[in-house]
Image (cartoon, rainbow, N blue to C red; front, side):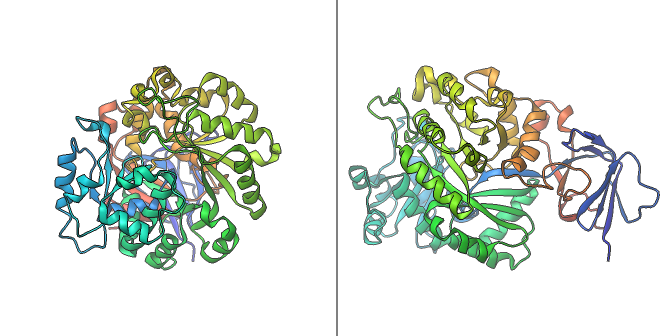
Amino acid sequence: MMNRIILKNCNIYTMSSERPNAKVLCIENGVISYVGEQIPSKFSGKIIDLGGRTVLPGFIDSHMHLSSYALMQVTTDLSGTKSIEELKYRLKAAKNQDVPWIYGRGWDHEEFSDKRLPSRKDLDEVSVDMPILIVRKCGHVGIVNSLGIRKIIDLGLARNSSNQAELSQGVLYEETLYRVIKHVHSQLLSPSTLRSAIENIVKKGITSIHWMSADTFSIKKLVEAFKGNLPIRIFIYLSSEHLSKFRDIKASYENGKIKIIGIKLFMDGSFGARTAALRSGYDDEPHNMGILNMNAAELISSILRCIKLGAKIAIHIIGDRALEIMLDALERLDRSIIKHIRIEHLSLLPDDLFTKIKRYLPLKVSIQPRFVTSDFWIRDRLGKRAKYTYRFNSMKKIGFIMGIGSDAPVEEIDPWIHIISAINGPYVNPLEAIDIKTAIELYTIGSSNLINSIGLGTLRKGYYADLIVLDKDPFRCTLEELRDIKVLMTMVDGVILFDRINVKK
């Protein structure tokens, strides 16, 4: 039976150069069959009059962490804490929960008056009877209490740690932290938390996500949660530990809306944790040049293994030393391989590397504009180098293929928060701001292009009917009005998943 829907009286922005604007959109069995000015004479179906409201393609979040985002429901929110005392106060409130770990996330010690990292002793004042893990908002440094340290050691999660001195104080970085987070996730993640997460994603107008560093435990929980009826599209990059089993995992879990497409590799960490790999020391910690996870030979080996197994590659790169190593690796790889690689973040791009990277265009990169706002301390970290951060406009001009991702739960999931940061900063170099048209393009067709996905990101004939309805026209909004813009409807495959207009009635 043909399922037909007509959206009329719309202010449609298609994000397609062929027909940028329209007033009518027809859908047949989840696919757009017509975009134009008037309803075709021979087309019949359910008519939805949108009263002049604005329609956009559904947002595609090109970089987020679904299981971590889902766990925010059972995580103590530590964002906005202004002191270690306030952090401890919030954690103490979680002691009454019936959970195996007290888990907190979102703090930033740069917002504390003394700007120091918490320690195991601070967390021991919260509890010595329950293990505690708190993760900085960047996700690259975490703290555990004394009981947490003992559990980590007993479980073998601290193996090969290069930071034993910090571990004794409860401080975890990079690979050790990831192992501990994965363990805690296995204790706390459930189908209900995943269902709630997807429901909230839909309410924000996001119709597809690129799930980074996914593990099989979490994917299994997702499948269990929706039993084949997943409402949105999820494109998965597995954590690198799953590389050898990539084909088996793909065969086991891939279905209509779940696509397992690649592997996520980490070259370095974050500016906030001072683990992003730099070519010279941090301005506020000169002896520290960050953590480099792979040299060029190791990166080449990982890339070639991915290619052999049919996996795309997403490479986390924030610091300039990490970028320089990656460019050295690209120099030694066959050019045909580059199309299978995308970069995550690309936060620091000095002029010499900017010149060098042009050789490999069009490179793909997922950017996180909210970092521009969150990294308010970036001048302290990088000094004069800060002017080379978040060069979005320069990258767009020279031909990067770009998409926007939230990095949730590192930042909030709401696309408008990231769009506002993209156009308003504050940037160290204001010339790197992008306009709202570009920002929305990057959040739709741009993110689709990162994975060469056909049928997503624009509203045109033959494409999936993944779209959203807004209460305002973002292209005619002031900055303040953008902050209050609301999603009224979210549709995937022509199915209304979220509806504030009550068109179902």
